[in-house]
Image (cartoon, rainbow, N blue to C red; front, side, top):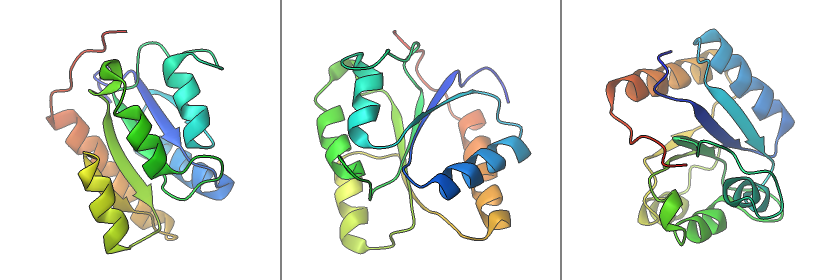
Length: 145
């Protein structure tokens, strides 16, 4: 993968899903720095430096689960959108919840995409490949941080 993506933040609480996503990244030769948070609160701390070391530069891409303990994905999105310096992050929901209400709420909070996880590893690998191809096609803003 080109150096377009320097940092990606994965916000996911399920260890099996984390391992499957990491495997899909490896198979697709995505070599960006991948940071991991187990819930929205931990991710906000990592992005703002309040309570955890700050991620520098700010991630271009955030992959976000919806249903998590402490702070779920939609609550995280609401708070994140209050930080002007974090508004340029491209956020993709990566979840197993295929509910219209959740999709609508996520898009109302300006996500770049809503992607359904798959328990089939080959299908997940293909979805991550599509994301990689998309990320190589688009122009992301340079991180300011």
